[in-house]
Image (cartoon, rainbow, N blue to C red; front, side, top):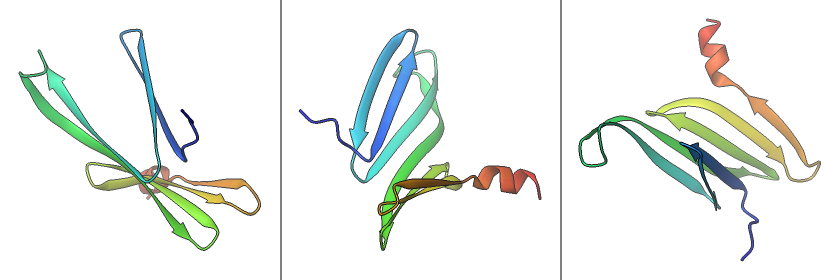
Length: 91
């Protein structure tokens, strides 16, 4: 099985590691409470990728607010981080 995905998520919870990859999008629900059945939604993390010519764009959202974009130039193999959250804080 190949582990060649453009997006990769690694999670560590209470010393247990889980990781998985995705080609186009990831959608994660974050819940808090006393158990799986007795919990409250605390938020939703969503990651998507799109193409613009030879640039692959990764957008990271939390509760429908875009936090960050990362652009990957498939020709030059360079990444550019566009940290939108720090731009919002500096307003």
